[in-house]
Image 1 (cartoon, rainbow, N blue to C red):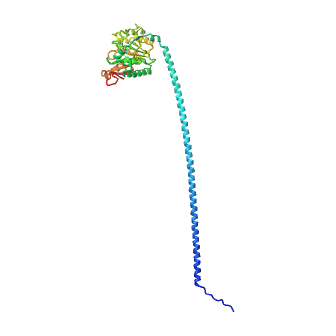
Image 2 (image 1 turned 180 degrees about the vertical axis):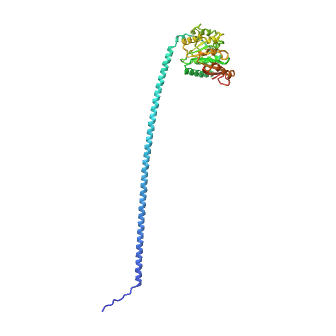
Image 3 (image 1 turned 60 degrees about the horizontal axis):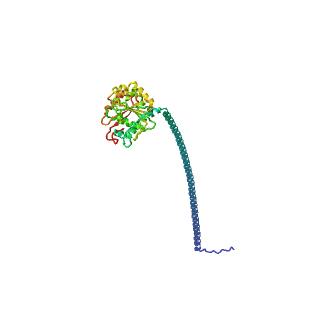
Length: 367
């Protein structure tokens, strides 16, 4: 007979405990899984952060390399620019030095040529006739009383005549001229005063031989201004009756500021037919003899007032240009225009000298 197993009743509390344990085990397993997941996420985050840090460091390193490359490139560019600038500066300095050398050589050559030309001119001059001219002794006090201000350096008006002298020499040199007529519209404008001052200013110029000729044959006064009595007849020189070397007088030794490179052709004898003599062939021949005898660089002619007589017009073919002396407060614009009309457009006006100007520091003269 089959043995029956004894039925054993289970404890319900034990079953519940087992279920609870299983639940706790599952919870613990879930917590472990969650913890593992959190740990994995943290590890992944750390790895990502490390990767980002490394990427950032790499980027910084790359930027540093690029910055260094840019700096080096800039330094190279600056160095090249500086080198090119220095080369350009050295090239410019070399060019300027070469130009200065060439200019110096040209200047030296020009000076040598001018010296040679001056030597030839001086050698060609008839020195004996000029050197053998009789001299005239001039008193400084007499010149001062006649307002010949260029004889000294104290009167500031001498500077104006020096300016006039320089401008005149430049104008003559530009055109190759030598003969200058000095006139005025009417009397008392100071033409002889201007001629004498200008002549003495010219006398201080080296290698500039000056003649001052009194061609105011109707009313000669130049000899009185200089302080000479009985100077003889300039008319006889123009007629060929007297040789120039027997009439002209050179400036002698003096105590004032005048050179010896000037000679005077004075006149003490008024001529009743002055214009006829001035335009005669005899006068042209006499001036040619004067040129041949003395080889002057500048010849000044003191002529009568242009509006009183026809002397200036008659003498026009024998001079190159004219200086017109006008009197401040005396000469009118109409008179100046009339002089210009009479002389004609073909007569070069080398300058207009304003004499007796009021309200200037030069007392009686301005230019």
